[in-house]
Amino acid sequence: MERHKAALLSICSNSLLITLKLIAGIVMGSVSVISEAIHSFIDLIASIIAFFSIKAAEKPEDKEHPFGHGKYENISGFVEALLILLAAVLIIYESIKKIISGVTIENVGTGMLVMLISAIVNLVISISLIKISKKTNSIALEADGYHLLTDFLTAGGVFLGLTLIKITGLKILDPVIAIIVATFIFRTSVKLIKKSSNDLLDATLPDSDIKKITDIVNSEPEVTGYHKLRTRRSGSTREIDLHILVNGKMPLIHAHGISKIIEDKIKKVFPDSYILVHVEPDKKNNLTK
Image 1: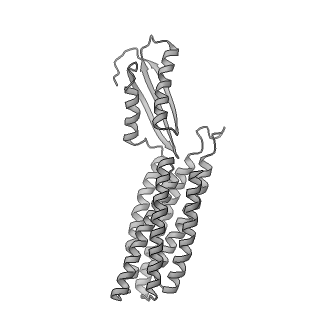
Image 2: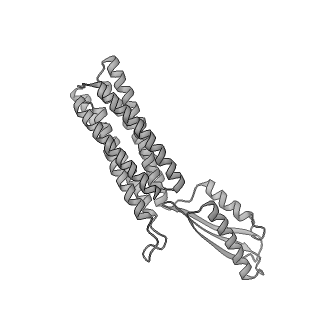
Image 3: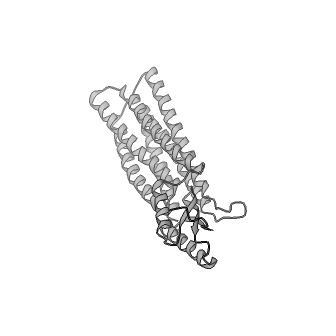
């Protein structure tokens, strides 16, 4: 429920900022302000995608999806990253057109006010989304949060640029600033594409997570070794599969108890996770932890 509210908050804030930026940009004839409106519009689409992907990801597992629907969030994050990339390309294109055709800009003070409001709103909302995404392990909310954090930086950059235009009268700064803004947006999109595609391709969990898992296994005195440790992320869920080795003469019920202890300890560290610990007899006893 907390994730739903956060996604809705993002939708509402983006809708408000699009309206403000678009009106100001048209009145001013400013490509940097209009580029920010385009950026916010694409972020609005991304926020809507994030909202519905979160709802879809929370559906319980079924016959067709025995591991649940968590990948919806990964797909959402990937699509959002592509949309940010598109925004950067559009902004650069419009800025170059403006440089070639000539720059005219009026009512700079209006744009400054809108960009300042936009920067403040985006900062507050982005911090909130990122905080909730860390708490709920939501890749969709994390992507949305970093989108808005990028908006904060770009809106702040446009505000400073408009301030310079007001002081110096150099209107050519408007499309130049827009291009600089677009490069930051491009960089963010590349990072998000890489992160979301890793999850879609079932990349292993980070080394820090792996270490927590192996430390738990190594803490069990009756486990003589382990192998076939496989991990991946599906939305907010971590999926962990490993084989542990125990004395071959150990009673089955006792061996099962050890695997259950390990599963419970991992579950305590990673509450939202699927864990499978398979027990094997260590006949040779030559595999070490």
